[in-house]
Image (cartoon, rainbow, N blue to C red):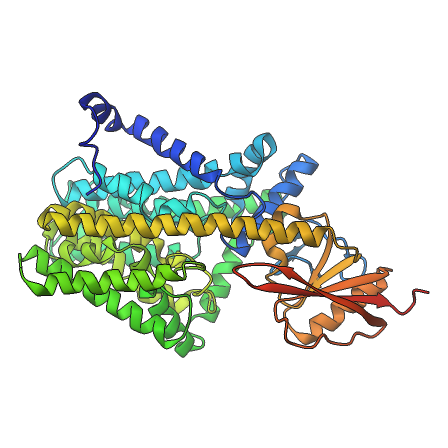
Length: 558
C-alpha cells in the first residue's frame, strides 16, 4: 500500500499536513508536465480549448471567439477548421466549459500552456482530497493512502496534465458524494443538501454527465434517509436543498455565458445529450462494456474477452484474499491479471478506455466496500449512476478516451473505498494491486508524452507545407493542432457533401493551392470542381500511422 513509512518521522509528519501534501502533489504534476510537448494533447477536445486560450491571449480579452478566416464564404461555419465549432451571434466558439477557459486564460497569458495546466491540476488535487475524506468515513484512519493513490496512481494523474475539465468535474462530484454521505450517516444539517447541489451544479458547468451522477446520488441519499433512517423530513430538506443548490449554480453559469457571449450553450449541450439518449442501443451497450472494463481500445472480441478476464480475476482475487483462501487459486488469478496487463503493455500505444483496466483498485472498492455498512452508500453512489451515464453519454466516444472519462467519478470513489479496505487483504495482494495501479499510470504518462510529441511533429510539418489551405475529411484531425491554431488556414468536414463545399470555399477565397489531409491513405483522393491534383505526400502522425496530403492546384492559376 502507498505509504510514507520509509521516510523519516519528520517528513511523514509534514506530508500529513494538507497544505504540504497539496503542494507536493502539485510539484509532482508540474514536473511530469515537462514530459509532454505543449502542442500535443490527450484528445481533440483539448485542442479546441487551447486554440481558444491562444486567441484570447493574443487579443488580450476574455472573449472565447476563435474567429474564422473563411467567414466571408461560409458565414455559418459549416466547414470551420475546428469541428464542433458553434456559431453564436458573430462569434465562433469551440469550448465545452466557459468557466474553465476563463480561469485558464490569465494563466495562459502569463505563462503559456504549462501554467494554464494549474487548473486541471487543481481538479486532481481536489479529487485526491475527496478520496481521503471518503476513505476516512469508510474506515477509521487518516486516509492518506487514498490521497496519494488517487493523486499519483490513478487516471487523475493523467487528467491533471491535460487542459480538460474531467479532473475538476470528478473532484467536485466526489465531494458531493462526501457531503451526501454525511447528510445520511452523520449529523443531519439542513445546508448539506444545498452544498451537495451546488457542487453538482459546479460540476455540471464542466461536465454534462454531472447531472446523471447528481440525480442518482441525491435520489439514493433521500431513499436511504426514508427507508433506513425513517426520516422523511430530512429527505425532503436534503432533496429540496440539492435542487435549489443545483439551480443556483446552473443559473449562475448561464448568467456568466450571457455576460460573455450574449447566449447560453451549456444547457444546450445537456438538451442535446438528453434528446440523443438511448439512440443506437447496441452501440451504447458495447461502449458501456468497453468503458467499464476493457484494456484495449477496440470493439474486437479481444477487448471484451480481456476486459471480462481482468474484471473477474481481480474480483475473485480480492475476495479470496479477504477470506484468507490460500493455495493455488489466488496465485493463478494473479497470473491471469498479470498476463492481461502484459498483453496490453506489449503494445502499449493508444488509449486504455476501461475503468477497471486503468483503476484496478476500483474492483477492490466494490468487493470490499459493499461488505462494510460505512462503505455501501459510497459504492452505490459510484455504481447506480452508471446506467444513466451510459444511456445519455455521447455515442461514439468510448474508444478515444483514457479510463472511461465519462465515469471518472466512479473510479475516484471506488479507489477511495478500496484504499480504505486494503488492510483486509494479505500484504502481497495489497502490493500487487497498488503496483498494478502504478504500472498502468506510468504507461499512460509515457504514452501521453509520446503522443504529445508525435502530434507536435506532425503540426510542425503541416504548418510548413506550401498549400494555402488545408482541408481534412476527418473533422477531428485539425483539432489535434490547437497549439498552432491560426498559423495555417484549415477547413474540416464530416461528410462528402461538406468536403466538396470546403473545396469550393477554398476556391472562392482565391487560394491557389489546397492540401487534402486524409487519415485513410489507401482511399483515392476525390475530384473537386475547379481543382486539379498536382502531387501527394505522406506525413508521419500517431503510433506509426500517417496522414496523406494530396496537393490540388486551382485551375484558374496559370
